[in-house]
Image (cartoon, rainbow, N blue to C red; front, side):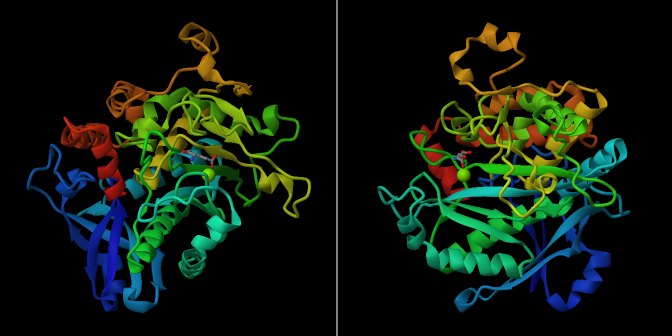
Length: 432
Ligand code: GLU
Ligand code: MG
């Protein structure tokens, strides 16, 4: 069987399976889908839904996003196709994350004549084994999970992803996996596929891998770092300008400026869980302010290094990284929010931002404000408030999206009310 599926507001991949022999037919007819499903939170409660029991949709699987990987052993074959959700008359559904991303990418093409090229870098933790003390970045830490890593790299390749690196990260049982860049909607598709492969392989071995934004506030978080650059119509890199500020083209600089200007209003989408805000705090190498960092790992957007040693041209190496994101989100929605913010920056003709090389947490509020920095929201509730009250940001999304999104997340927050922080962390660890 094959599952037609799509990432949703909860950052879950939901869908419906059918015999693979029907695939071709289903790429035209789709499989039936229900609007209220989008209000199922990551804890399986149904948030306030404007749709109730009404309505019908179709999910149309995309051949280009079809994955068939034999995981071996009892696990058998992992077979799914990422899909678009449409109304019965064929219009994209307003809550379809993949269609929302496609619209954002069209806007980038329309406004700047650019295509997006990039990759998600993922951190996750094995929750089933206590972290081995002294294993951060070590060969021993890698050795512990070599078998898993070898399976994952093979599965990524079979799924059409371009495996890059796998390493023991700093945190307890924490690993990081990277992949080569893809174009457009495939950037988010590949992130979705990677997360599913990690989950499928760990389930096969009776393991528990978690992408939760943070397991324990005393430890480090699991980030999703989104590397981005642009391609022009000829498919040539169009982000690097050796004479530009921070070596960015003016357009790339304005795109980054847009991200930073609207960041506090989009983190509700890029870092969308209650515990995401335990991670977005200073001194965790995540992101706490709307700053650009030049090779600084404590910035929301970081200009990544280019090396003279590489056989890849600098123009092709050059990229920037969005760090205020985690894997509790739909990668399609994350990318849509970032792209829309960036294009907004281009449209507004914003100045290319300065880069920080200091600890912003040492500045008080007036000093921050004088330099145009804001502390990012410190709770999901605050983040939703900023999202909802920014008409520009709300306007990037289809009619009704913001209202449904806020209701969804309000339902998620309500489910956790009265629970201790430890229990809240444990619930997120279980669901992601
Ligand atoms: N774990 C950090 C985060 O939450 C990132 C560490 C790194 O720079 O790789 O984003
Ligand atoms: Mg890392």
